[in-house]
Image (tube, rainbow over all chains, first blue to last red; front, side, top):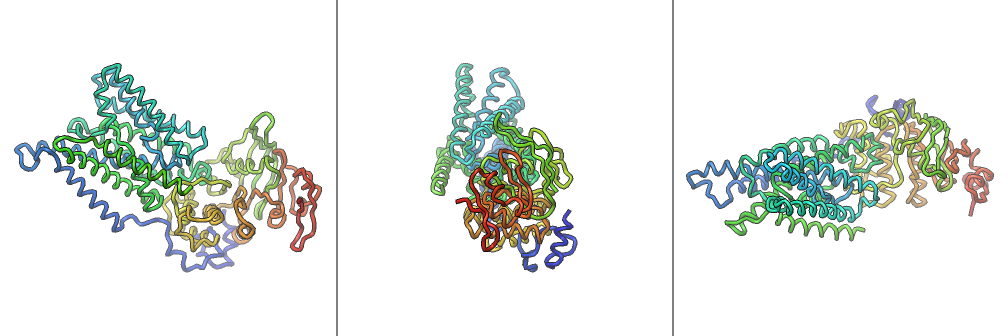
Length: 353
Length: 251
């Protein structure tokens, strides 16, 4: 189809035989190949970040009231609590940060993530529904219900977004937070009237305290989500250019949004059941990474994953250490950190106009 | 190159486009002109399959727009709307790289990088290619988007008011670039233009729309005429011989 372009460019002499079809003419030939569009991933800062995060993860294995190195059954304790807890920290941190990034691309809004769109509240409601209807239901059933509810809730939010044209506005997360508050209030009411408030309390304040062998295994399922997001990264970035531009580039925008919603719902549902609510994680991490590196999603994803792991692990370690031998839920610490960053982002946005 | 047959789009009972029958020839610049609300942009977005039609058919290079897979169309036609809301923090080069998405699905080959470099240079953005889009002026950003569309390497390029937000010098520059896209690269460019004088000076074919219908088509000499423009725009227009060609005067 580019024969016309070729004929045109042949006389300008800037192209290399039949490989082309691209614009020619204005080029100076020689300087073409040195330039590249992708940022390199394996750089000194990235390696440093990975090493630092690995150190946090190792610390997480050994920090706690129980002396896993000295005591007689230390090894057993290590396997029953520390390993599950640390695995969960890594997976939940990575997947929630990545979910936030995907959601921000799909909505073209920087302030959106599962806890500012009501997605986590919907997941909680789904989990509660199972606890009410079938009190002895296995973890897996709760998880399925949470994922389904998160999916429905996210679609509700996206449907709302399509009807109002305020994509860039900070009103979007405010509406999402309100939506989440309403759903959360329903959950609280139902939990109160069915005497389940205490079990729900653990959900409202996400914590890794109860993550032990026999209860954490479903978290492994998020590995699938992590891989799927990495594979579809380019599609999500193109979708982030907006519906029209991405359609012009041949992307089936609706299908990509649907895929993203499924992945976000799966991640949120699973993490909600195993850990609980991890507020602002998906907001803080992608925004910090984006500020530092711009938005090349494919090369940012590993960064977002690593920083997500580091942040959750650091917050959990802090929660374990400050009031030893007691623990502060990780959600509390994330709320404080996230709230501050959220505010800073809002102010920054206002200054930029 | 582009054939529209009885294309119809209805909004409300009194607002409608079409039925439009139109043949856009291969090569050169075809300009769509007309008053506000005439349906120029809507027609362009329908042709670029960003908007569905209620009836009729659009064919681009033999491909039925409604039936062809979007991914396949993206290798034949590139389309750019006038407002592109962007939150993603991308550099110029990264944005232009997305123009290769229909060809490489995101994994840029050496050939893709080469095409990207040429597109960047063609739009004279070489010095800015590492800059973030939110650090650029409106005109520079506009050029970056056009570079992206150019890198898509399609036979047909559809642009909705590419001169929007551009000052005099940049408007002229943009039109000259579009001209070169047709002459040097053999593209078929369809643009929506607000200024009839730009259409008269740079376009090879002019299509005048009014109330959702095609009223006149032809060469600039045939369409940029006092009685035609007066009829289309509902305001007295004179066409005079200026130092660089014919000029529509309507002030």
